[in-house]
Length: 187
Ligand SMILES: Cc1cc2nc3c(=O)[nH]c(=O)nc-3n(C[C@H](O)[C@H](O)[C@H](O)COP(=O)(O)O)c2cc1C
Image (cartoon, rainbow, N blue to C red; front, side, top):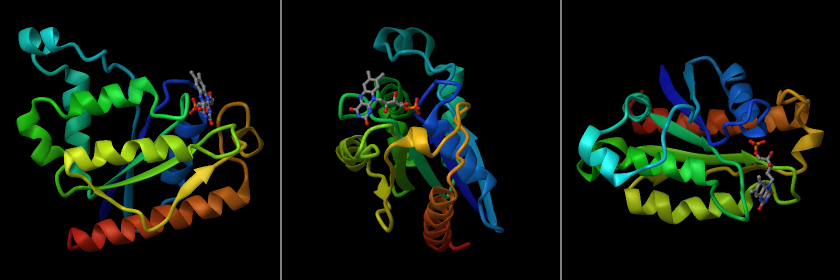
């Protein structure tokens, strides 16, 4: 069984990106165990809090999920042509303490996907993740790209993916990434 973790970078109930992640989980092929995660409960990073209280439980829980995965897909919204602060904040927490970067990120396979109402479907936020992934030593998979523009035409009001062609592209994306991550993990 290949373990894939999806993380949605939006806290919104009817989020396109959470909807995309849920559709990816629902449509995952046989042999793929697709777990999902959101950023709810992760506080703003504060070095004083880290020094006095350590790593928050919600961060530790997400770290464990990442470490259990053969591959991680970041479902990223785009804010002001870059990474939304809540998502970057969560990844920053995951990189603490820095001694854990090796076991959480180094050599682990990551992929990027996203949806937005704009015309370019998160291309700039996906690009903005590249130096972050490189800094953390993650293995970024670039075998396929998944950017869904004009998301309001592809999702319903509750954030469910309703467009059949987009769903097919999503399935192909997840399958290709899972095949790759599984082979790399010897599964
Ligand atoms: C502060 C802010 C900045 C935004 N900037 C962009 C942007 O640069 N490009 C874009 O395509 N959409 C932008 N949007 C629109 C988001 O793509 C849209 O709100 C989307 O629904 C967010 O993802 P979600 O549905 O997963 O929550 C922005 C939205 C906000 C709130």
